[in-house]
Amino acid sequence: MKIVVDDLSGAEIAEFLEAHLRDMRAITPPESVHALDLDRLRRPEITFWSVLDGTTLVGCGALKRLEPGHAEVKSMRTAPERKRSGIASLLLRHILDEAGQMGYTRLSLETGSTEFFLPARRLYEKHGFDYCEPFADYRLDPHSVYMTRTL
Image: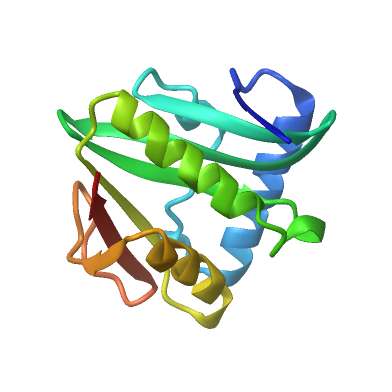
């Protein structure tokens, strides 16, 4: 398995991210969907990684610069058929390492509060994230939880 910086120009990642947005929109009210579309992921403050098993795309994740020393984990997704196979942990460890090398001292994230997102919350807890108040432009939302950790 390898993790590569992705310029988001390929059709496969575009389809993968569109499936992510469809899933989020199907289970979360529109005002509470914080997943970024392809254009918003292409901004200079975002570094995006794809996880490849051979040539097969099996996961993705991103890091968005918020302010000096603080970034947000975005767009974490594992291919549905590969969930619970260690891909998300592998990618999150990579993002944590990269964030440290980029000079960040704090990472935060937003994820859903419903049962569907329980595996994600457990993953983040396992990797040292604690629950916190909304950060950046987020506001209290019953459909969201916010987490943070220092590096």
